[in-house]
Image (cartoon, rainbow, N blue to C red; front, side, top):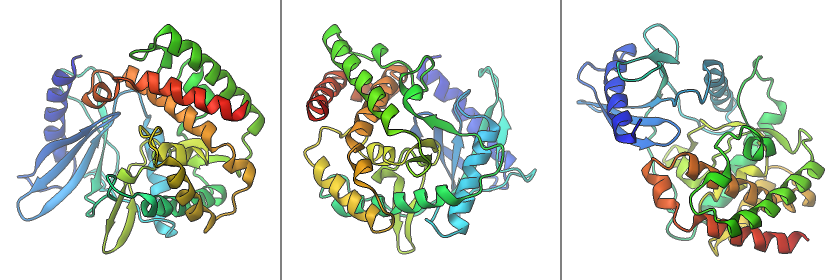
Length: 329
């Protein structure tokens, strides 16, 4: 379905779904972001605001969303990091489901509390923000290692097979725009090397566990009450150091990256020990994430953001990969 047609249906679904929660009758919904999910700002006269997330079909099961909310609850209750709250529907369930004519299947939905605050400035010196990201990542990782998860616990996996396997979560990077034969040949070698290094690195629980997987500055909101970490939609099982790689999504070629990595590591080590062997593999995770993003652009090319990112992305990924290979040979 063309994106514009899909968004028209989702707008109607969002408007219809408001009755599932105890929100003001005169509330309106406005699309503010579309990626894996469609996200809407819900507003009403008198100052009411909340955030409605309509889940993409066939991306998460109900149980997976329940597990996401369980981790949000645990992180907040144990004061690991301030997380966004959510509303229960009129039936007492935080996860609602609704359908509308024009869409083949019903969609899962969650209504989150509106989180006031501003994201750190990404146009200037980002070192302070990345140091704070490192602190928050380390706190979340420590919590993941000791938290008794509800069973069955179901979330996405961000490992080599999820990126390069037979059924990759975001598609095959080879299908992305501008993957020429030259780019493909270069990235085939990068993929082989990533596979080899991470097979040796292993999945010990102090390295591989539950992670946020999208811990960018855009997902931090700061106000007088502190810093909130938002958007846990991609949280799942992966390597802890992948959280740094995700933090620099789409800017992996920036000259700031070495300084941002140093700041992130400083913050991280202020909370949790990090062996040199783990630090040494961070660049491998940067390349794993970069190739996952290349695949994401290809599988989401109907949306405005991937369309804007696509020109030159494959060639830059190949160049970054060749530079990385030179450092690990």
